[in-house]
Length: 274
Length: 301
Image (cartoon, each protein chain N blue to C red):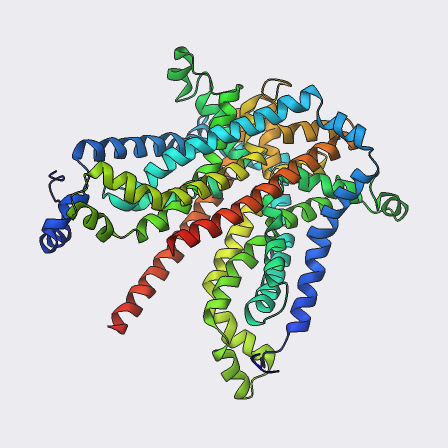
């Protein structure tokens, strides 16, 4: 065939066949099964189950806390990435390696240690609770846990871009008489912003589905500190499959929309850099 | 405009060579120290303290109590089950990852980007929803529930369901690490081996595998860490039968709910050690890569 490279490597049929079989068995069929279940639910019932007041409170907490945590990560994560790339300080390599700790740590352990840390007798709680900052069994606890799990995404997305940011461009701006403030806002910030937004979106997407760490720190009180994934588990334990499926589909559609948005953002920021 | 005093010789040299322009890009000391303080405070609260706290709480009742809570039968059963589940789930995902990377990295076909998107899909599904999907398939009320019951097979509230849920959440790790590495090595080496008369299998084993081994190791390590630490998905399908379907993360929750804080932290400390081990391997691999890159640059010059 003209224009097409001839490939002598063997095994395409075998590996592709296995890939498609395994992908279908583990991922596609279970996801299809979930969506098929909704066909048995009428639109009216679906809408009613998806918008019960308890469900609405759970979405509000899930998305509200995820949003706040993602903002915290965008702000502090950017400062942290900046410090790691631009400054020298003792323990820098250790800190750099430790950034991935929340990603490597099982979420149950994260929830356990954070609940203890911010609890009444914890290392931080004993100082913060008297000041009125209660981290355990409150919505603030949910935000703390989500900030913890989302942090590596914000820092690691930004780090390579900061490293490749050419000092020469800033120097050129300075040579041309721009003040440091002006250099920051008209040279550095526009270059970093798309990446910061991508990191924000990744941290947000990670936070929306999070379950393990929150179970420990939030106390799971309906209408107060109950997140959407926890409500799904509750429905399931009551054998209310229709209710569980409805909430799961809502959560999944939102996750897929976020995934699409992130892909678009990554393309956008990639184009910007080129 | 003056920056902080230079501290190391390399910096002095660099400064000297670009003395004039460098001054313009260094933040004033006040801003620099404020940013550094915020960065360090954030990392202490959100990285260092949670890590140290795990071990401090685990050992708060002494070494003896620590050892006892780990060897206590139910916790011991949880440790064994965690290892069993990972020992089944990780090799299957490695097999898939290698097959998927071979077909995606070495061949051209239509729908390739769709396939890679589908492989990443499990990352964007909430673990609880993942567990629910398997309950809908294999639970008593599920699509295959009646058939399984008729044949006396138990998937949900039993080990097979937990393995399936673990495979789902760790599905993309190996493939994701391997695909870019295999793409980067290209086709020339394999084609040379085949031309010289090696069989397809020999080519894969002696040419492809050695060239991607670090990527593969990294993928396996990440896959394993997640497999042993998964909570949400396994929680939904396990049924929490103490001593039977409790993995280590589930055991941590069990003990926490029974107000056995120190024992919960003891089991958690093993998982934290696993996380530290994972980070250690990752850091080593990165340093290795950086050194190889530096060496290649020097040889190039």
